Picture 1 (cartoon, rainbow, N blue to C red):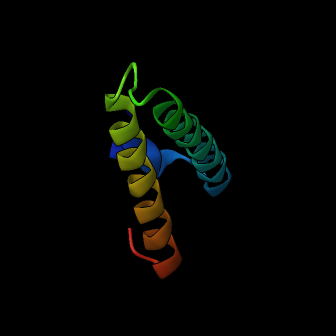
Picture 2: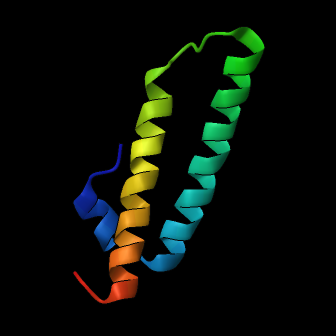
Amino acid sequence: MTKIEEIREQSDEQLEYRLEEIDREIFKLINELKANHKLEKPHLLKSFRKEKARILTIQTQRKKGNK
């Protein structure tokens, strides 16, 4: 889990790359859930979604010019 301060220090390109990674991981976890009807590590799905929301929030704030 990445802290919000660490996210703010990253560049826009790094954040875009991290979002792509998170989307891939979420996709894998959802497919595993559908195939097996259970996850080995169910907490990861929630943590990836929270991290994605944090990154999207930071990107929105940057676009609006707020810090």
